[in-house]
Image (tube, rainbow, N blue to C red):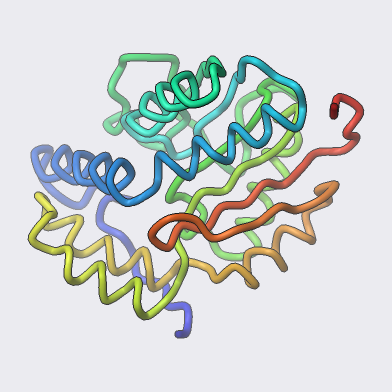
Length: 228
């Protein structure tokens, strides 16, 4: 299945405020029911356990309303007793919910100093980037992170695409009905993502397929002096 770039409506807020809000609600449902939160919790927990951390300060890039951050932090505490504190970064002020620390900014030029966060993470974000942009984002993340950069995204797969179309009755917004299949079409395969990540200067790459066609990766930062 060839990668096809189709512009997504939510990226440009191409809808009414109600449609945008409902699309963000759809994203919350998709992340909660179809593995997004579960995958992020497992990836963050892997970083915390490998580096001996009982709390995580992490940046959620493209985090929109902050729902996945809130849900993930709750799962982290319940599953592993790890306390998560999140700052959300999004390009659009209209996507933020005002409930926690949040910044409008550019993912390719993160407005933070070196080693500001334990982890820089993203969910359903990197498929919006072309390979050169994706590599640039990972390099920026490695600069800002103390330990690792996490990618939590979709797998481009024809079976996945078929499930997305089958899920149309679940979506509340017409934006989602356009953007969901577009996201799968422009997502990366595991092999493509590994190739890109290996060119970013990360110390090592950990990559796997998670529940319901989720692609999860950890780009570890050098040096690994704090590993247990």
